[in-house]
Image (cartoon, rainbow, N blue to C red; front, side, top):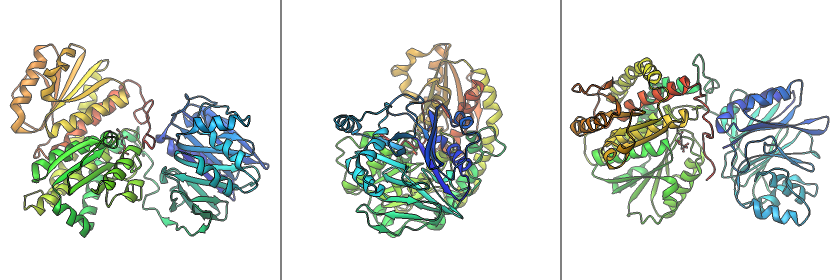
Length: 591
Ligand code: F6R
């Protein structure tokens, strides 16, 4: 949802800004731009397209203070004019977020004969700053913030303050970094960690002013406050793809390590005594998330029902936030979000809390917005995930859910798999499953040109069907649907023909016969089925991909891997960029 980054340094820092933009490109890649001080004036360069299309414009330029932006378009199509930075008078800004009342604000400014050049909601910020400015930028920012509705993280350059950057935010993330001879900021830490591990997450309402020697923080009322910089736990190489062709492929191969680290951490830290008490008294689990995280929630629901006496439901956070929920007493809400910043999930967490639920967040980003609102947080150790399509973070979400729900099962004296079993058996099943990569590549080549794909699964396998379908549609742009196996005869069968592939996930022996009936029904209508299974199946004359066998409740952690490979190789064979699918961005911080 747009990435912003900037440096102010003793030396030329345009290379650092370029590097930061590349690291933030997963947040949007519709256009990119920079603004920097040059001989006391602000120069602005911007271009439609990926970050790399901006770089030729920067050749030969130097500056020791600048800001950059990579855009995911919300208001106004991707174009040079709508690209950030935006300028008005002495002010130049970059913005991540949405200004909801920009229409009203534009009308107000029009009365003063001030009109925007772009179709964006963001330009209004520069216009308002110019309008409110009386020589003190912090005061102008305070005035402007009062007028803005929506979410934002903004960086500002003002021509009266050469070598200074002003920052402010509401709801969207903004991190300030401190290093030897420089200060910097970004929407996310991977853009900064190769330069400095000392980071400070800005608080909502804070305004920060940085130059090459210091960062001054002001709280909402304008009073100077102390904010602490702490060393980041991220490794500086975690945002590199090494020898892999793409981040997505690397991240699939990271799964065993991510799972091991996550489990070890949870075993070591455990749950707080308050969470244990709430879980002991809980009678209902509501799992909330969006996209892949929602699919993890579907898994959480089936798991809770299978291994605990609690009832459970799963819902997309965006639906939950806009309905009357009548949550039963003693509901525990589990909010799942890789980034911890997804606007719908953050708002759903706030709503659940206001309805009296105890909220546990499962996220991959420590000190993300969700962790600040949840009562308890389980932070997975998938490390940075750069590819827009979630892979390793999804597997670690499932592991976190398994670990959490097992804790509840144990409270009810139900048997579960312990950490040793998970650490050994689950991990080795995953490592063996990674061997299907070549087979999935061959399958992707075989089905190249296919126009419709269904992913089917029952119960636990349904979660995998949903996730497999999302993975393929988001990076290969094929029309793909994930549905429960039994649902195909209630409508989708009408679409089955020789241009359709059905990928059927079958890993639960107790449901095998029912699933095989569906395989027959598809074949009888000329449809082609590919089965991904851990079971020994009778020959049905269809292609079968075999994966290691574990109990049904653990299989989704393993069986999703072939679907990740299939989606990846399909995109690669189609000549598409699997890491950066069109129209999407990671971390959806707008509604
Ligand atoms: C799909 C994908 C998205 C995210 C969704 C939620 O591959 O990555 O569907 O799962 O946008 O994001 P988080 O988990 O950050 O809340």
